[in-house]
Length: 305
Image (cartoon, rainbow, N blue to C red):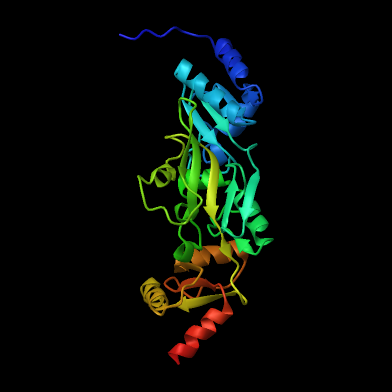
């Protein structure tokens, strides 16, 4: 039978400070309250976290994990603190491990069509940096301006461009992950083709930090399409006819970069919020679409007609 020695909170915090010397460690109620209810999805949790730790480097991450292992504490990874699905909320007596300070874009390689980044990099910041080199990062969750790549990977974030480019998992080539024992492992590679071994990279994506802490990410980039992007809206009598329209688009050989369907009630709610006048009836539906290049549309139309 295992017998565990009881430790005071002060002893745990002192050990944590020794093992994570470059981290910002907060144990006061104000900081704890700000980050415990991640993304303000809930006002509070039952109990109180032990500490909020903003790691300054990988050694700090290792130190937090060693502390958690020694004292049998839960770890809750966070980055931009914007989630509304409460997967990164604090746990009573646990340690929130924030990676928001690990926010460097290490490499954008146009020739290889990849970027190597740290988990605290904001999605939109990566996209802007890539566009300066004629590339772009495809996954675009609604939280694109504020969410981090680490959080996107933890939740396999989607977005409006998913119809063409997929979710986050479809753009991730490789990861570095630190396990609970403090060992960092490398998963995947920099190449688009990975035809051997177990796909542990994909296992990590969507796992919300339960299998390890992501410390580095390698993602695909795409060249910015030639021509002008076309964005528009189309109205349908109901969602069934809208679905038929989407099927016709997908089967035409034209691949929109974005499709978003809104039913009549949603359009009415949008009208009230934005003071617009799109809703035609309770049943009418709205399809928002975007095509990467006008040239692509002209080519398809010329072949069709």
